[in-house]
Image: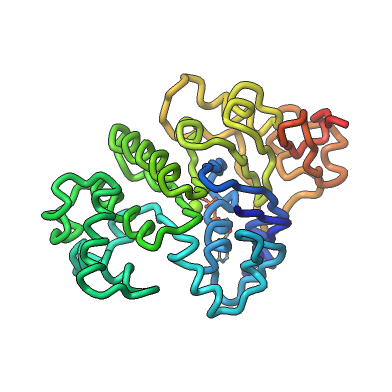
Length: 319
Ligand SMILES: Nc1ncnc2c1ncn2[C@@H]1O[C@H](COP(=O)(O)OP(=O)(O)OP(=O)(O)O)[C@@H](O)[C@H]1O
Ligand SMILES: [Mg+2]
């Protein structure tokens, strides 16, 4: 359903051009969830904003983003706008800022429903109620007329998801959608997302810092470092036998199974994306670094036959 080829997102910064995404490629099937895992600044949100098409005008974007075979990057502004909401929707991290405090839940849902093809007031209201029921909000009829501040954090995040689903998108981009919630509420929202993607046959890209969250919601995981995917595989492959030293570091930091703490950072800090070292971007922090790691930037190599990938010269490629 979604195929991303060699995606580059480049910003101009006072320190020079900065590539927040540098050659990202992956595929996503309808009804499946890709978990995107990585430290702060690895380019996760930048990638989602580029896919949605909401980067500042000066941003340079290269590559292809094929949605059902149509390249979003080849579309004009009007065509692109038409894909937002209807084909691609995004759930932002903070449910309070994502909702407008001066409008009721009903007003916000109805407005979103009427943006694309307006079914009329009565049908739009019926659809708003359906959406609240879809995201399992109890007493949905009554909650429709609540203001955001009258709802708990978990309820607000459900409303944000309901708004994102208003136009039945094919692709849902979720940027740390549960980080602001407490652990039990988070688990329920994750479960709900898992049910919805099956029910709506929707592809989901789910960004998180938290390996346990990624493992509970995703089918496949892409590990990002310094704007690139450094490892890609199924949840089991990544959790049981991480191939890249960076992934091993992330997993070593999450020792207890089921532990939902944020990842403990690996020693050192990520490099400045506007001024990357030659060779492997992780070399400076890598416990397994050798002199050849500095020579050139490593390519993604295929491991096994399941489409598993890793970007490290020490990983043995399958012929
Ligand atoms: N509009 C922009 N202009 C300039 N630089 C930007 C812009 N947006 C993002 N960046 C830079 O791109 C890099 C990646 O940022 P991004 O927000 O994608 O990180 P992230 O992986 O989502 O991190 P976090 O986990 O903290 O949300 C950072 O260095 C950031 O400063
Ligand atoms: Mg982010």
